[in-house]
Amino acid sequence: MPHLSPNKTEGTVNCASSTCHGSITPWDGSHVLQNEYTTWVRMDKHTRAYQVLLNDTSKRIAKNLGLTEGAHKAKICLDCHAHNPTGARGERFVQSEGIGCEGCHGPSEKWIGPHTVEGRTHAENVADGLYPTAKPVEQARLCLSCHFGDDSRFVTHRIMGAGHPRISFEIKTFTAIEPAHWKVDADYIQRKGNYDPLRVWAIGQAIAAQQILDTVSDPKRRDGLFPELVAFDCHACHHAMSDKRWNARLGIGPGRVRLNDSNLLMLRAIVRAIDPGASAAFDGKVRAMHLAVSTGQKPAGKTEVDMVKDLSASIEGMLPKLEQTRFEAMTMRRVLLALIDESRESSYSDYAGAEQAYMAITNVSNDLLAAGTLQMSGELRRGMADLLKSLANDEKYKPDVFANQLLALRGVVAAQAR
Image (cartoon, rainbow, N blue to C red; front, side, top):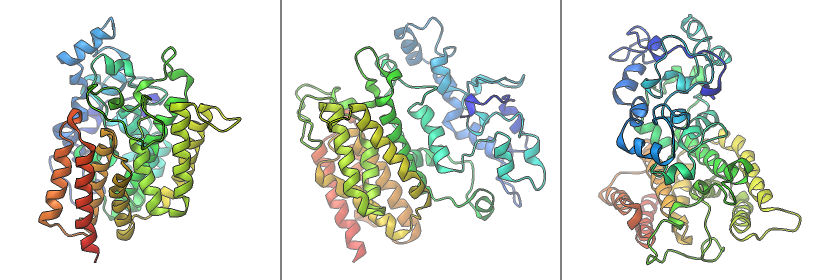
C-alpha cells in the first residue's frame, strides 16, 4: 500500500506543473490527459478529506474518543483523511492537501523522474514504486483500505459510536463520481491492459466481502468479549423497537446480530450469472458461515472462525476467474436480472444490501445502455428513480416497497429482451 511504502513521499506539487499533470485542458497527442492534477484539485473530494477533520463533527468525534489532540493531528484520523506515509517525507510534502497523488499512486521518490522518459513502460514505473491502480484487485484493495479498513488502518465501531457517519462504498460508483481523472483509450489499453468497469465492480464486491470476513476472523479485531461490530449490519440493532424488521432469510432466527452481507449478496448474483454451476456450492458456504457466526452451528471439527476463513478462501479462489471474465452484453444482462431476482428471496431486507443493489443495478444498466442493448424509456427512467427514492432515508427503508419496485423493473428489462 502507498502509505506503507519505504520510499520518500515528495509532495503533490511535483505533479502540478502545466507541462506535467496541471494543464487546464487535456492535451492532444499525449498518452495521458495532463490535466489530472487540475481535475483532482478542482473536483475530487479526496482533496478536501483533510479539511473535514477541522469541522465541528470531527472535533466532537475526537473528544468522544478521548483523543488528546485534534482529529487533524491524530493518526487514527489522518490515516484515511490524508496521505499519512510511514516512510520519509520530502520538504515539499503538505499533508493538509488531503489524499494527494502519492496517497494512491505511491511515494514518488524512485519513479517521478524516470516516468517522464521517452519509451519508459508502465511496468518499469510500477517496479520503481508506482502503485498498480490499473489492476482491479490492487485498485479494490487500495480503495477499501480506507473505505472499510485493513490491517494497517481501520474504521472501528468505536469510531462510529463517537459520531462517524456510516461507511458506504462501491468502487465503480465512487470512481465515477470521484470523478475519474484518466481516460481509457487505445493508448491506455496498450500500456496498462484492457479495462472493464463492470469487472472492477465485481472484483470490488469480492474484495469488500473478504475484508468483512477477515475482520470477523481476526483476533486483533475483538473489542473485549465482542467481535468488531463494524462488520455487522448496522440496522440489525439501530432501528426503532417498534419496527419489526426480522425475517427468515438467513435461517438464523430472530434476536441475533447479522453480519453485513451486502457484498456477499452482490457476489452471489455475480456467481449465478457467470458460473451457474458453482452457485449452489457458494450459496451453501455463505449460509453455513451465517449459521456459524450468528448461532454457533457448525460441522464437527470446525470452529466458527474456520467457517469464516473457508468462505474468505473461496472468494480468494474466485478472483482469477473474475479477472478473466469478459462482461459482454449477454453477461451483463444476466448479472442485471440476477441482481433484481435477489429480491424474490427477501435478500434486500436490510438497507445496506438494497443500497449496494441500487448502485449495482444502476452501473449495469448504464453499461447496457452504452452498449446499445438496453434502451432508455420512460418506464426504465421512472423505475430507477423509484428505487433511488426508496433509499432516501435509511431509517425509513421499507424492504417490501423496494422489492415491488424491483419486480416492476424486471418487467421493463425483460420486455426489451423479447
